[in-house]
Image (cartoon, rainbow, N blue to C red; front, side, top):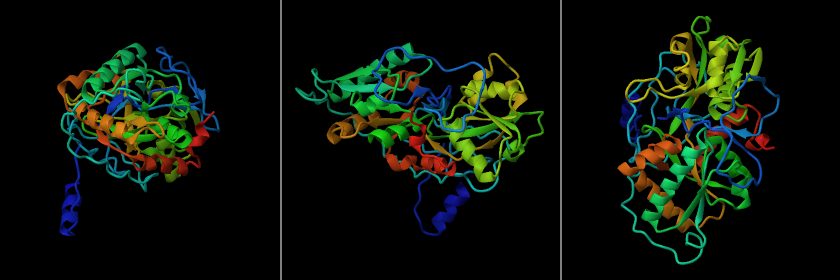
Length: 409
């Protein structure tokens, strides 16, 4: 990256590059958390957990489940998988990741999607001055509804969401109420004003309901993550081309890192699986490779944690299978995927949106936000964003001959 940066300086072009995201996943990320895309289901404080069970054959059409990659973190604007994942380090991020990408063969050839434009990375604004609203949206009588993406621990998410809302009330003077919905249809029906949406869920909500992103989340200083292709260490498969004609496990038909991006990468490289199946989640996809049910799998990647411990999808099985890192290896990476969002319904008042965005940027820079934001989705900060940031995901769908609406029920 330094050679690239110096070269650009010699050409006289001032380009700012910022250094190293998520994960997650897991879950560890906020990354592919499952929620059903559809219409109008009212919010509830209970939601089903992450799907498990045996793998099912991959359908020929897209499913309607919107998944977001578990605590994911990794990114660079290049498809060179052997390079250190790079990302922006906006003000407000708690930790800048210093880990490098695991040694693995990089997918050759061109990437399936273009690089996403860099987000706005201005310093956090000064502490907001609370401005209570006597009537109308944001008042005691009509609080702003804020929805959080369902996760494996709904009770924990509900409590953390309430804490975030309470802290925002102190910063803005606005009133909020929170819920964990079972469907993103609430954005279209007007039940929600603000929602913390996963990447793919945002695309669906934008396409179907005109929802717009205001902030992109960061994890360990990164605003993007990657998908990874894994195989057994003793399989003889050393790059994605080795998956040609093999059995490949995907996580979910609407998972950005576990299906959309890796399958688009396969298509761009002329790799055609002999058999495809949906494992039901990131941990299950890893297990399918470990147990030999699948030869390869697509799942989420995250660079190591600041303490050096692994954070990619394989880490989700470490407690049960301590030798997972030795038995399952990474053989390729997808292009970068923008992180999940804080999004606003269509026609949400701009003045209120600006107040909330500024308050969130300030809030993320404060020590008291660390725990609740971590509990909400392993979030360490935010950067200002807009819909163009997510065009890269649409490009990957195009490579598959699909559109976001193909995943609607």
